[in-house]
Image (cartoon, rainbow, N blue to C red; front, side):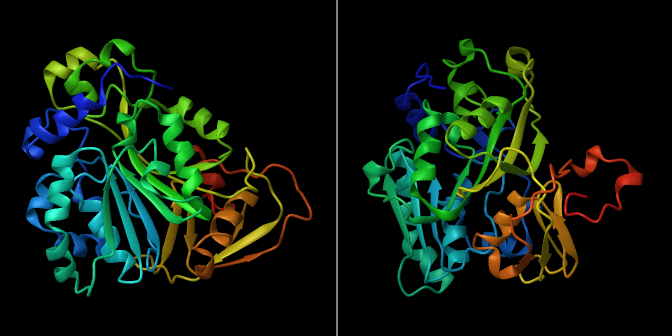
Length: 353
């Protein structure tokens, strides 16, 4: 899980000096189509300063709903785009910490801080940018159980010690807190020979985690159930790089996980029912917890015990009514993805359809 073949100093040089804007990127790994964003985030994007936008490099949209009043931690905040969006969504009563190791990027974020607060109409700044390493959040004075939501956009793959990153994430999250990240994952383990290539590493390919190794890592840290909310295969868009590393299939994926102690390693059936009220902003008719749990507004849905906890023991709880408990067990719950079900199975009535 640990690789130091490509140094932090080289990464800082790549993001601080070599990349001067999105046009300097050599692959399609660090790009996210804006149409993937919900209306509220699209609206906030119009308020973000151009300098901040021009130095943004990310592969997804790791900005979950229901951030009002939350403490949000952005790992690898760069020029501050996602941190500023989170600050706007968290509101004046919220608080955002942006962490990055590259001073040139933080200079841009701090230079735009006051003007962004003016554009948002905030009387005082609710964002704090800190220089440091995402593997050492304790060194940045971020206490245990202090953060509601941790976000990160195509950065954790760059870390030489991913296990330490996720260990720190679960340390600082409050009970019921949410990890919501977008990153590059691989369909196979990436050979270490690629780790010293500045472009392959700097553009989030060489350090991409094999999906199953990611699952195993979270399991070792006590997170037995995480959910995928989006996935797309990455088109590298560079023939030379395709020839070099095109044997590996790369994916931009958005993952959510919660700090909930009662989660089990498979979906279990306790006869619980969850009903979504339709009150989450941008989600009046349905809410997708992940790629195979769609809650229709007002419709009672059979759910597994893990899903009941995710919507009933987190900040999403005010938007759901969960009935039943874990006093009686009915065996495993069929949480197969909708894409794995036949048309004849589509009327099962559960949230996994």
